[in-house]
Length: 150
Image (cartoon, rainbow, N blue to C red; front, side):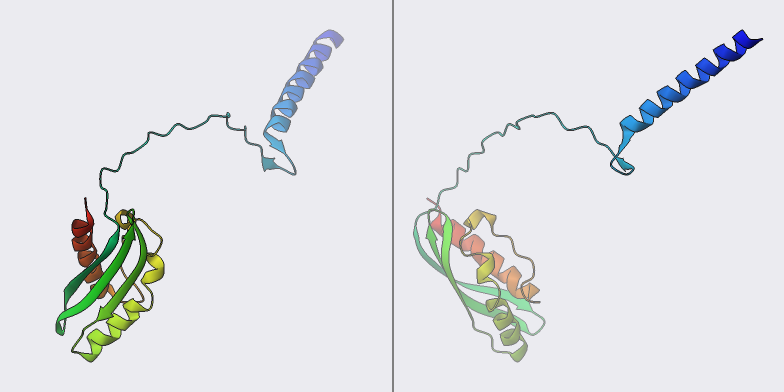
């Protein structure tokens, strides 16, 4: 009877040893889950060609948008150098107090979001709470892009 007990004991020790090895392989560093390092793969990128080229220069438009108080207008001037916006000016021409307020709110925050960036990358939604002014600005930028294209 001692032989079957010895075999059973040895089997339990082997099983517990295997479980212990498995668990120690999964958990290290105070029970944190160990992750297998990712293989060293260099990603490949497909170069994209941008067929749009822009003339360097200053482009100005009279922009507009519809507000609850009626149509609002603004002057927009953009300086481009190889498709990069180097400077921009926005001058609201609102006849209403509300339009003037939102035009100035837009004016106080938009330039940092466009200067130094490619004209093709500009995509604004709301600037300082001014959504309608921003929409009019984006429409005016489309006109400037058309004017500046080679």
